[in-house]
Amino acid sequence: QAQLVESGGGRVQPGGSLTLSCAASRRIASGDTMAWYRQVPGKQRELVAAIAPNGGTTYADFAKGRFTISRHKTTNAVSLQMNSLKAEDAAVYYCYLPRLELWGQGTQVTVSS
Image (cartoon, rainbow, N blue to C red; front, side, top):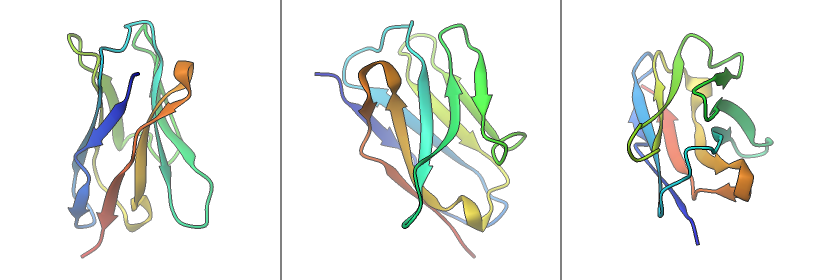
């Protein structure tokens, strides 16, 4: 069974950068859309960014201009480059494979000085 494993979370100061990665236990078909979501306690999980098989991308308004989603051509691992991080970006970030309704376990991002 496929599994998604996130990595790259951690603590960063406001204005800093982090790169999150999502790897599948078995290679995700290149025809899959992949997405990153985030969730803070007491709030619903929200879409951060998504990447389609053709490379087309979608971003939440808060992510536009600061975050970049990309797909590794060989492994289909999906990354989320986050720049100019703000305190309000602190959350648990999840990788999601819509076709299988499969979530990763999440990785914590903390933004504080």
